[in-house]
Length: 451
Image (cartoon, rainbow, N blue to C red):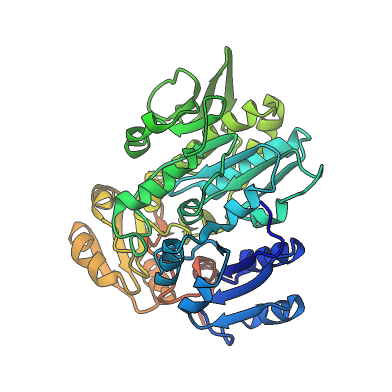
């Protein structure tokens, strides 16, 4: 891709957008940028943009700016359905994601991981397993470094492990991972997609350019994943918690059994700090990928026994008088909350709610009826959640997350679990899921000495 002298517009100016601007400038492009947020909201990037001498429009996107470009690059999260982007496409202007741009300048194998839940954990696990073997593995994409920072990395890397979101996959043309991993698909981002099928189609674009010599790792237990299995041309490996697989990994929850190209191995999970059945799925997918790309059994076992998982994802906070507190603020969709609830045998007091994503709550009904002794609802979605799920268990509402923690603490019994797992995004009350998780943890840590 020759970018020299091309008029290039970068849409979205968070970390990825800035890295893209710098890359394009180095390639000799005539770069401009467009950002929905105001200058006041984006103070932290203003100085960087001045240093790069780039013209920027703030607080919205003007049609004229978009139609005067040779190429438009979208940062993750920018909706391609925006009118100026659609008009640019109608005019024949190339519109791609930052991930697609980066791919044009990457000449080493890519392992790409997507799914509604578990992407980050699986990406980091695979990266650690390869590094433990001594591989020069770069880890980035939707987690860590933007993919554009790995473009033209010379011999610094020999393989890249990349988390990719549905938003990033919408803007690909030639992006072709050597190995694709699809962990699961459940309803999410219906505040962005007009229908569930559009979200599914975006996810399975990960296989779009793969051929027979490439690799695909699929969740055999996920009905949506398996519905689209026939559209995958790559060599397929499966993982399952329910049955043995022909090629891939299966598990009884205590061990993972690997069958790969005539090799059969067992991995003991008794020392693993990762909790929850969803993490067993993540570990199965990671083991298949790492083993296929040169990690030894010993290297994989060392990582499994030390990897502690992600902050804000089923994160143990503390125990008070026999009650365990877990922060699952990253549980921003129904499928994620379902997996978290399935991870506990103990009765749960569930704190849920936040900014409504308009997803179907029905998959939670049986779990709430069977496992949740009490539900405390917060945020914008609390009324709808109370209507649809409230009758299934003892349900109350709280004005703030701190109030919800106090209510849970006062009514919890020894042997129970208090779980923050919202099934919603955080933007009605918090800057992001991390801030929400930190507020929860701080409230829990204050409980012994309430002010």
